[in-house]
Length: 256
Image (cartoon, rainbow, N blue to C red; front, side):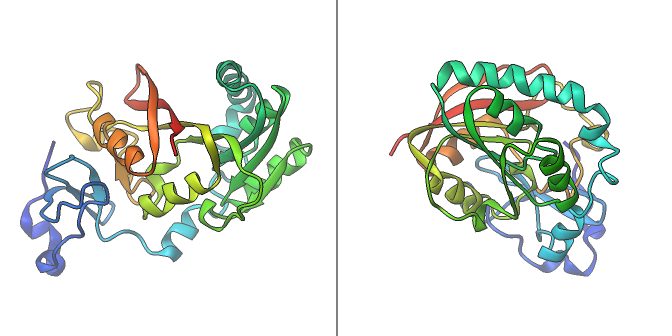
């Protein structure tokens, strides 16, 4: 993987980078620079991360009408996304008899609706108010919350938490996962996907990888450090799904 030359860091090059959020190693190596952000790689677990992380205001701006009034991204292929969500829920339904389902980063509500169709009491959390309004308008039979999982009230716990292509966006991954596990029943299932920077199809020139897009993506995992991170939060990986594209897909169970 490419490294940025020391002089690319400018006057901030003397500031020590933050320790790895997974293993605590405090001597990361320079990994790359992109879009004005510096990235480091942990020399123990190989997590790649932005440092310093984007500010709260920067992150809020990223998720303000992120899909051009619901005309771009997922919304441009909404029927395809809904069909894929239904297939995924059919597989999840075989593992969990029913109950309460929570989609973190629910976007336009496609997976929340698929969960409802498969017999779950379905809930979605979303930061982008425009996307959430689309979900509420198109799939009104479900329950929605505008905000972060960290701010979601703990009431009745969930049997399934769905977290697809979200964890790479967060600045504080331990706070994020702690908030998730607080919402899960003992024995509940987490379905999680995220890009895999170690995948054999990840481009050697990292800047050619469409998932390498700081500050939108702050964290870049591999299967080993993801398993280590989940275990720290009482989540045991049950199964990893082999992906053709550079990604991690897995089921984990809350063990405690």
